[in-house]
Image (cartoon, rainbow, N blue to C red; front, side, top):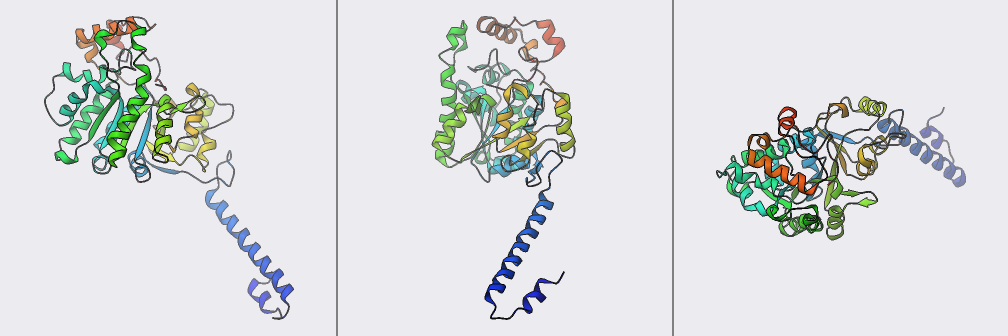
Length: 373
């Protein structure tokens, strides 16, 4: 084939129609070459279209902190009682860059009535254990309470990070659950008035104490507050309406019910760091990877994965485990008796068995991690 350059040189300058045809041919060739190059760079696996882009895969702490360069609020969808995710929360706040570039964290597993207690504790003051545990037990939406050891250790790790910092640079923990007096709660009906307050309370803190002060915050909250069965969950909807494009959501990937579906995912994720943040979901092959046909996900989480900015990959699905329980629940009989009272008065679950708790070492409620509220 003759080169484009030599063909053009042979054309008489006056032959405008022929020249126009050749120029169009050159442009078509350039476009075709660009398409070939683009396809070669973004070529997907056998299950994806060749035109799909590859997502970015980063170590998880780096990935979350990079999202804060784009949005002032980053939400980590909490799969309640998932050990690997709870461990990641502590790793994130222990990274010196978190205090420097973010500085705030709003959590669902703490009650606002104990805000003064957590403020003193993470500042380094001595707080007796019986007082400190009010932080995670005086919560309206958890019955009998968020007793996973990972939640408890999170507060310890914030304290450890803050002890290395001057007061003006320390991490502020905001307890998101609305105020409640559990001594007055005697039945499931007594709890009903608190539930409608929860989402508004999270939003008020984020709005009044963070965004209106031009600050940033990490939000750790159950996925049901971020995604509902037919669209955004209540907290995400409130933030998006009042502060468009200010929220990024990272949802943990826990795999599918079917073993063969998880095997397909594992083949594509074997080289990913654990943990890692992978995204964006929209506009990349990751979206189709998270929507495998004929694969059932846990508690209808497929739409959540597909509509998040990124996913948190915590390892192969069959490696994920339930978080161990705070051992004080069976070491301290007052603690055990109160948690057991709440379980009996306000849920249809069976009473807690002290001996079984001692031997199992897991929380009294979940048989698998909970993905919702």
